[in-house]
Length: 192
Image 1 (cartoon, rainbow, N blue to C red):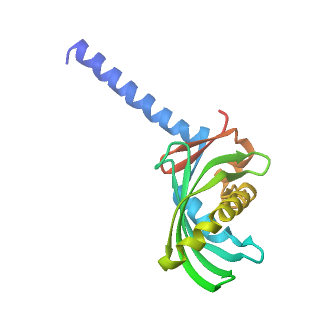
Image 2: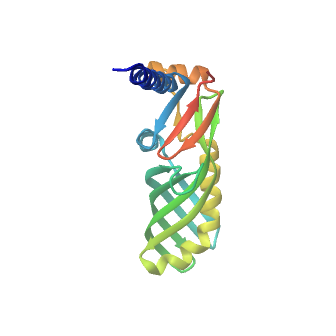
């Protein structure tokens, strides 16, 4: 081998080594929470059950279950949730039961003092109701549901760092500086 070949190989080795070190360092400077982590947390801790409506005109009890997250995929820096709602509606014209598929979207925000991620400014983007004849009644209740979901997620974390879960999560809770949304994950900056 000539000197030029040796120099090129040395540079390639150095770049490979530096790249490996930098990617290893990112694990020390950030903590990642996957969609699966958020989904697992929501499955255990989601307890959205609400009575909404206009008293005497239309009231509905809504229970939301099966929430699943999609982080930073549909829209940058946003979390989209899909879920199922069981709806019992009482109106002047009688009672109806329905099932709805909901699509929600919010801005994830990290609260350092609590070590918690909240989904702020939650919006009900879309819904499909079955049976179809309940659509008009559900549509009239939508603004109340929208406000209730916003209030619930403004005050109920979608994920909380737990020092008892792992050493990495304990470190993330202690050193967290900010939150970044990337496709498929939430990344907590540890400030290094």
